[in-house]
Amino acid sequence: MNNRIINDPVYGELWEHYVNRIEETIGKALESHSRTLALRFDLRLPEIDNESFGGTDSKVITRFFQSLREQIKADVLRKKKNNKRSHQTSVRYVWVREFEQRGIKPHYHILLLLNKDTYCAPGKYDPDIHNLAFMIKDAWCRALWLEEANLMQDHYLAHFPVEPFVWLDVNKPDLNSSYQKLRHRSLYLAKVRSKHNEDGFRNFGTSQG
Image 1: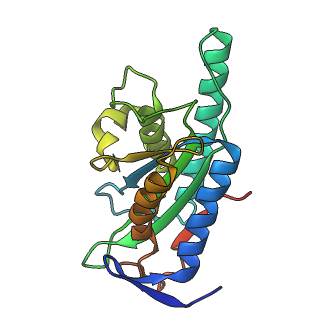
Image 2: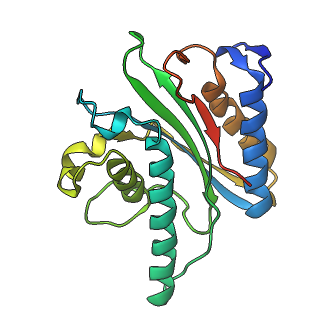
């Protein structure tokens, strides 16, 4: 792994390898889908301190993406069967694991890249509406091994920031400005600070292929 550190005027020290992987993942998404939705959100752990709790498991982020992929696949198939507008989508992503200031409790920052013709936005969270926001929150609860009944209570564990998404369209003249906006926001994931390696868990990952 390239351990070179570069400096950013906004975020400070960044891992160059992380920056390169982020840019590669965005590029692959655009190769697959000329119109791409780039969505940023955070995944938090509940206030539970128990060795059997899923949040302490290094595979929790893997379970999250597995569940989200399965839900997206089922959602597209369901729309097709109901003769609704549907498009296939790859599921590409970047994730980082960081710690709060005390360095005790981890959380995850996610960049999710999907076909904009499949999902143009996460939608407003509503347990009665099966949209992208619901699937993300549900996938995180499943990854944490929380009961389905906890979804309403624990939906806050998946958090969408202000203006969480950017649209990229290779056929639009504003592609470069949209890309630069996304790149700037995504560099936050590559920062050196807030990442710990002492527990042996991975701090960074991307989709493959």
